[in-house]
Image (cartoon, rainbow, N blue to C red; front, side):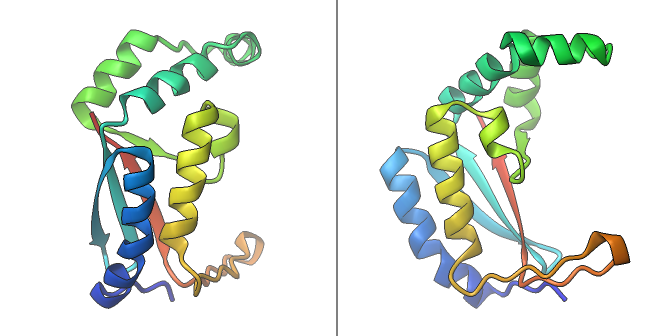
Length: 139
């Protein structure tokens, strides 16, 4: 069963603070439901702008048109500033620009830590990992 304690958070925060300093952002950590380590990244406007640039690329636009899904960059930025933006940590490389990919993969690795393990098997509804992570970008 996934579990993250305050001691785990304290231990992981050392590497996370190094990543924050390297990329000149502020990160606040919290624990949700004793199973998820949550990182709220502040000053992430440039990463969101890269996200929008990637989402407006011709291949992504063509796919959304095929799926009849509208993507309005102005609305996305307004919602980001109002509600924050949740990062899907499984699709970082496909959805963010060069700086965003570098920062988010390094942050993900720091949040998982050295003792992280994941033995999930969705086909049998078996989920066993050390803890979950949640990355939120905030204005």
